[in-house]
Length: 86
Image 1 (cartoon, rainbow, N blue to C red):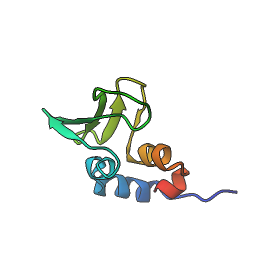
Image 2 (cartoon, one colour):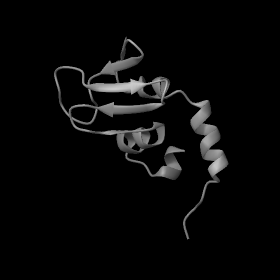
Image 3 (cartoon, rainbow, N blue to C red):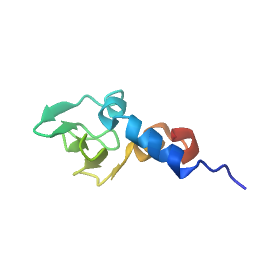
């Protein structure tokens, strides 16, 4: 049986980490209004369609449809499991 991380621990980590700080380690972001925008790291593009919302703590690419929270971003960009991302 696989490892299990208590939901309280996952929520604590989610609340204590700012998705903008994490994503900026991989993507150059510029603030526009409430959100930050940059080139999507998951597909090639010339104009920024990758949005990060610090308010909602989520990301979304309007070009390829990728989206999620800080854990799914790390899973996708680093190619790691949920347990490793947490």
